[in-house]
Image (cartoon, rainbow, N blue to C red; front, side):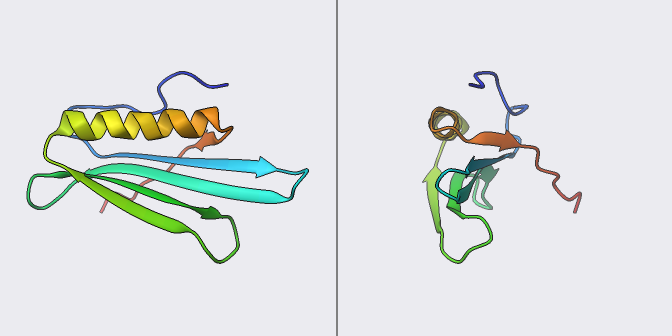
Length: 97
């Protein structure tokens, strides 16, 4: 099980982690994307998107926080939950613009 940090966190920087889980016995392939981004109004948004890979369906949820510390704590809690559930972190290449 992976227990180290899977992201670099500079104060005030956006964070994105993609997780994938393959269960070959049951034929289930799932993903989870967790991101922490600032909003236009100075708040912070923790967004979770989950669903099956290459299939319709899925869910998306956004939670807003006034302070970066609160949002980062929730982000790390969601990250740890996914690691405990057997999801593997996948590197995400973000666009420059």
